[in-house]
Image 1 (tube, helix red, strand yellow):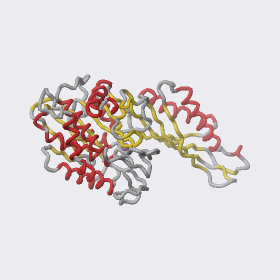
Image 2 (tube, helix red, strand yellow; image 1 turned 120 degrees about the vertical axis):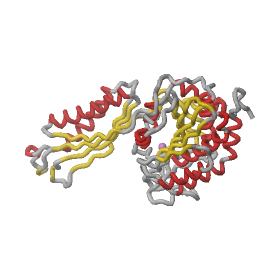
Image 3 (cartoon, helix red, strand yellow; image 1 turned 45 degrees about the vertical axis):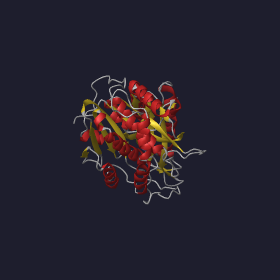
Image 4 (tube, helix red, strand yellow; image 1 turned 90 degrees about the vertical axis):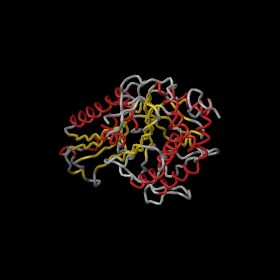
Length: 415
Ligand code: NI
């Protein structure tokens, strides 16, 4: 056991050992949440399960009202810095097709993104850190956040009010990374997303007399092609963006020209700059092409999440913590960012910090089903590892020996 010599703080071995002792509790909480998945911003049953998991701990608990969010604050025995640890709690609207004994009992509801595991690991970290409250200088803010899947729950909680913190940390499971290893990367980590629906308004009529109509079908085809050319010609190859049209809808019969065609899709970017180019270009190309063919277009843009950007200094700090816990092999330096999106981006917009990927790929699995697959599974041996990592990040940060100093007075919103 390696106690931190600078204080009474537990060392990596203590944290891992305690987390392993707690494994049955973590597994139990995870499975109970997994059985009864909830969607969106209201996760009341999940909230009750989390609160039961935190019972008896010396925490200041605030229940949010605009969502089922929970903010639990652990105060050390002397003043110091504050760190936020976050888990998301919601599931996806999809059927589960695993044969797990604890599979979803709700129709078309599945924890296919591992948020059940995130929640259990954070509750475990709260228990471990509570046991070492006396060694801590400062505060740990535990953020249990619903509505990650397209509801922007993190923004909803920040808006309702969160304490100011000096740093923030979160992890997301990855069935593609083996258990015991952690994927990390400084800078842009996950993409922004923005969804769009376009209605091309022409004038319908008889299919044999297109000259008397404004046919929206070839216009839609031209727009789809032009949008792809736009991405290759205007988005810098060094700062990528993706624009995908996922839905084309229009027309009723072989001999009828439709009045309108609807296109829908999504855009992803790794920087605010490319995100802005995509948004501006989409509107310009769609309106320009529709107009050049005498049609008009209505564009409904639904802004999604910003880019998840890992603070370089905090990411370097978390890398050292990962190495201490799991050895040098524990770190997987991700060569590229991930094109998926995450609303932890809102927290990292206001506070320096990092998100990492926790390996949950069971040993011997050849083709693991990824997150958002109806067959997604995860290795529960990773649960104590995640709980220990949360706890280690917080203890090291609050011990003042992190080497990480916040670069400026960024905060997570007004309290
Ligand atoms: Ni997720």
